[in-house]
Length: 103
Image (cartoon, rainbow, N blue to C red; front, side, top):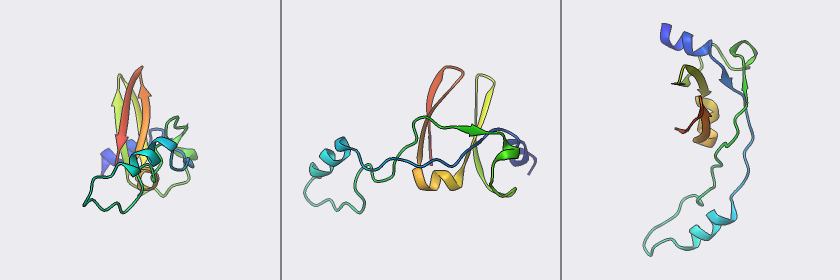
C-alpha cells in the first residue's frame, strides 16, 4: 500500500464541474449508423480541459480513496477516480507534454 500512500501525497485533482454536450457532439449523434443504439449521447460525459490541483493535505477526499497517478518529466500528478467516474477524460499537460487521463 506504500505506492498508493505516495500518490496521495502528490497533488490531487480538485472537484471540477464540466460543461454539457457540445454542438459538434450533437452533430455526430445524428450520424449514428443504422442498427446502432445509442444509450448516451456522444459528449454526454464532459471531459476536463484545464484541471486545477490542490495539495493532497487540502483535498477533501478519504485517505483510502483511489487515485490515478501520472509522472512525466519528473512532475507527478494524481487524479481522483471518484472525479474520473463523472468525467472519464482529463486533458492535461506535464513538463510541456500534453496527455489525456482516461478512466
